[in-house]
Image (tube, rainbow, N blue to C red; front, side):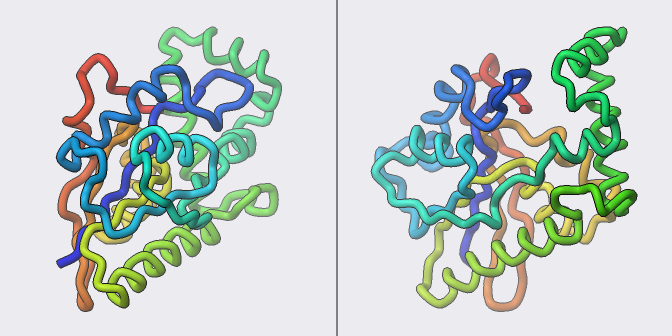
Length: 226
């Protein structure tokens, strides 16, 4: 069977005006990804894919150096800011959003709970007309990207494929393969660590989950989830 490794990008710039770029820690995390593949300068990878978001491409550039990557927009993350703003319009103002979060007794739990609610509204298409990308379209493009990578692998007899993507994409693909209900998606998304590796096994007949969210290549003090 062939293996498709889904790698979540390194830590992005959470809390900054532009989230879509690696943080200082994210740059330090990226090279550790190679430890998962044997810690060699050029791991035996038949194909390397990435979405075209900045944090995804930066992760590739600072981990799989010297390996040509193929840009596949279907691996891009959904617009989490839009999904949250549809649930909480007031957070469109960054200062108001920070004040709201920091005014809670447990800011971390508040953000997680609000994100779960927002995700469920989006997945069940409440207020669909205001979403930048309806959940149905997000799911369709993620599955199309998966099928494209697997189809190319079968055609070109590739056995080791890596795709650098984001938590939402990875959780959707895992939920789809395991036939989990949409309500489980948000829960999966919040526990996927930066630079973690999820392995899918596939052949001409089926796709299965080899393992999920492995981040043992990272030092404990560098483990993050955003």
